[in-house]
Length: 280
Image (tube, rainbow, N blue to C red; front, top):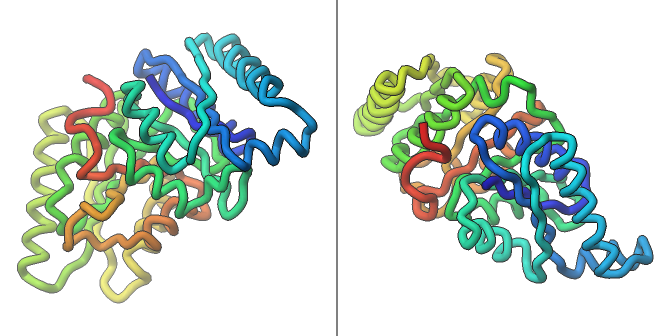
């Protein structure tokens, strides 16, 4: 099952579109979730509607998605906080993936960069964060995976490979440039582990490296993703990534809010279920 938090904004509509493409490939159903909170009550006051009316809107939306996509689609409304309710619901419903729309710095339920990352960090399953860029029919076919010295890269490798396998995609490893011998070896070991796994699964890949003396590593990740016309960027999130991981929370937010609106797969190595998003 693919969970889509929904807050009646264009990014959450885009998240549904992504979910239909992914669900169709993975033979999954879609579950829409609206978290009822103070923002929902503001919407109800603005539109002069009741909680029952809001429920009717969600029911109509789920019915329309199922009718237009042919994918079984349910919905739920749960009172709570977006920071705890979404991760808890994903875990309890045994969702395989959460696809969540980010509204930049505004939005009905404050689903903007830093807040969405906080939700992803608490999630026991991978999260794909989207803006308003629709997913092309071929799905996540070109995937950029930054590769640094962090030892937690195995989970990212497995999850990214699973998605690439589903869509017949190519993974573009983008390695951090290091000058310290220990870090150089750590990066190379991580790349070796990843490429061995890709080879075993017959997943095509390419390897590029950060340009020394150029823009920041994060800027170069985004530039490389734009250059290869990426459909997805895969990153590690959370406090459990390890001391050698180069990305800070601010970096994560910058990647999630990238100007090309490339979707971002977020994986927390401590919380994410070990294995693949989908079997292959």
